[in-house]
Length: 324
Image 1 (cartoon, rainbow, N blue to C red):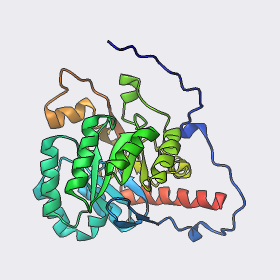
Image 2: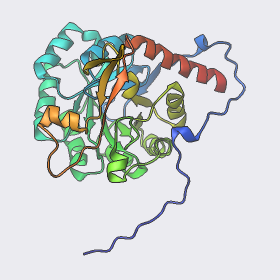
Image 3: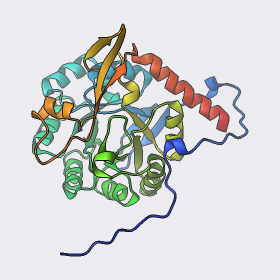
Image 4: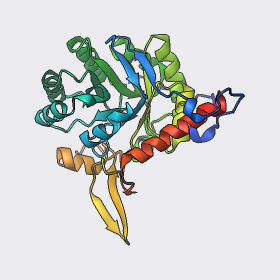
């Protein structure tokens, strides 16, 4: 068998916690002067999208239709989890056409997922964004899925991931992805780094992947590790075009997840999509050949999501006043 040699990367790699943003002179008088909406033209789909480049993760508990209804007025996106039926999609879009520009239909690499995605997009032509989401964006099968999806949906904007290195970012963009999702292991309920030893400090991953993507006319989403508005600001500062959050938006009225009460306090369940909870729910349990790479936690109940969204936007505006 061929021999493999380990190579140690000597460069310093950074996470959000390792850095702070240095302030500089600013001409802005108030946070109210800061415009956080952006306009993007995507490489392959040639679609133009305008809004606040925040995306809620395609997880059972936060990537919900209820979340989309609450987020759309703020012109931010929700990647809808892949477990809704075609009929549920049809009902949602027919009743909430205003949400269509701010949702993405999610799928993995299985033939079943592809058939369902085709059905959703043909039934709901107003939906023009696809989120191809797997834990390991380095598999050849995933690259093939991106190519197939691009061929089938030439005018749809395709998000694909997850990866953490420049060469695979380039591979996905050249294969048809408009936006590459960056992050392996930084999420609050992800245990991939513990279970596999695989990962990359998130801030450095964004810097390197954004540089690769932008050189080809593509875009990146920072996915995972956002615990506060300051982390989102650092992600944008590192070059992310969009920031995806999961845990920050768990525990709200619009989030799914069982409500539990303990000592007079309310909590909602939040779990990773590779957790044993998710696998029991959708596939009957953890297969013998794999292990759980996520955990289940109880998140304090937070009420309506609008308050969290305004706090996040306010923090970003404040960052901009500090750096001009």
